[in-house]
Image 1 (spheres, rainbow, N blue to C red):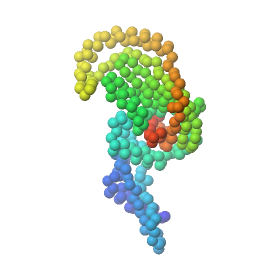
Image 2 (cartoon, one colour):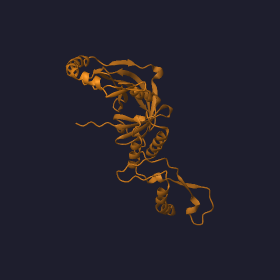
Image 3 (cartoon, rainbow, N blue to C red):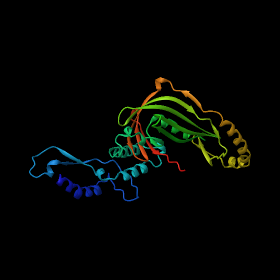
Image 4 (spheres, rainbow, N blue to C red):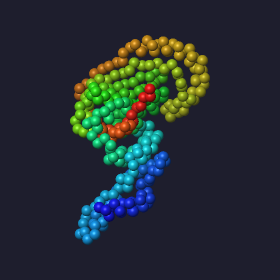
Length: 295
């Protein structure tokens, strides 16, 4: 084993420099990391007088990469992918490789045994889930904006709430589902969906039109319309504020979820103080960051 350690310290750095599939990350400079194939070295090469053997020791350059650098590379890879909606196949492959590297270094290997580590408000920053892709695709419609997609885990009530914020012209609302959960393994939560909800719409007092909008592939200039509405905005704000006060007294719409759609599961494969990676049905992956409130 001593000779293996000597080889790793003497040869591995040169391997890192020569292998174009792996790059080092120094200080605060973020460089993308491409998938790395492990270097396979015959075990017999490191023991004097050993008989010829076909056994191999896999030595990966990733063993030397700090967890913080892998997280930085992952965040860099997700830049511009619109939470997964605009990710090309090669970017997805890169993200999946970095996710696997993080999972191998999971500082919380049994998160369901420490539910406090899961408790809190989490914001989705990346997913491969097809249902959420359909939701994210709504942002491609004119004047539609998909806001934060969040998941709130409450270990005291054993519930999970998923919420999607949606803005359309002149109003904003949110759709949510609430589920109870049971711990089924050190990583797995079994979810039973109970309720769905639609938040009472909030009328937007600040009507901000974009400079242009694309409809059926054609760009429409809205500059003149914005200028025409400018004098009206101030008059409308007061009226909308009064209407919002009345609407805020209306309770959110709640409805039961049919039992045949009520079962799902969540496997938490990586959890630290600010990042969580989960896997679900069909191999879907979800990356969340913890929402921090400042008081």
